[in-house]
Amino acid sequence: MPVPDEISEIGDADVSYMRRMARGDSHALSSLYQRHGGVALALAERMLGTHDAAEDAVQEAFVALWRHAANYRDGGAAPRTWLLTIVRNRCIDELRKRAGSPQRVELDEAQPQAIERDPWPEIWKRHCGDALRGAMADLPREQREVIELGFFSGHSHSQIAERLGAPLGTVKKRMRTGLKRLRDALDERYAESISS
Image 1 (spheres, helix red, strand yellow):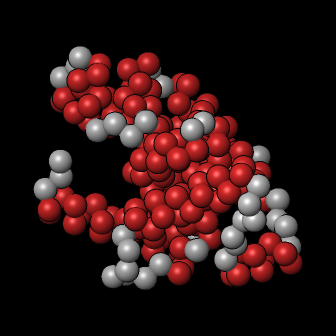
Image 2 (cartoon, one colour; image 1 turned 90 degrees about the vertical axis):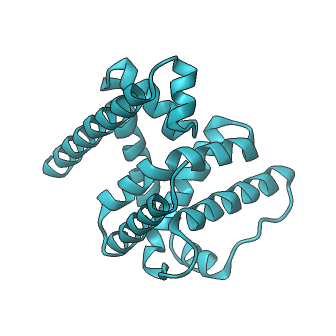
């Protein structure tokens, strides 16, 4: 469990990512996803019961976080808390839709949708998902396994070590190396996509 200084550093980094996202830095969004995507997905899966629906809710939440990054104010809720609140609200909306009850939509969210339906976010979401799946598939099995357990299933390093029967240091090294390879592969795919 992180000590208070580590928690402060994590929070400071998240605030920095929010500021960079407000300036249009997509790498900051990617970094925030790497830090909190696993716990967001675990929350959505618990609420919705299916992996596909949970992935959709998390992707929608990150798109909303990206669109509203400029609205983030220091001193308010931590970015992770803000993100998880958005995920929770998306899941509640999905559950209401399944139940057939009217879906509550905030006025500031409904207005732009009523005026214009922009297909770009959906296209970008699919492109990013394909790129991430491709980059994950290229990782060595040991690195892919710890990343999936940590970021997509929400397990801590200690839980992963126990589950795999591996030393904690080995798990941390595999995670660090795998994330660096993943980031490099995604950067390369991004560079290829904008040059073609």
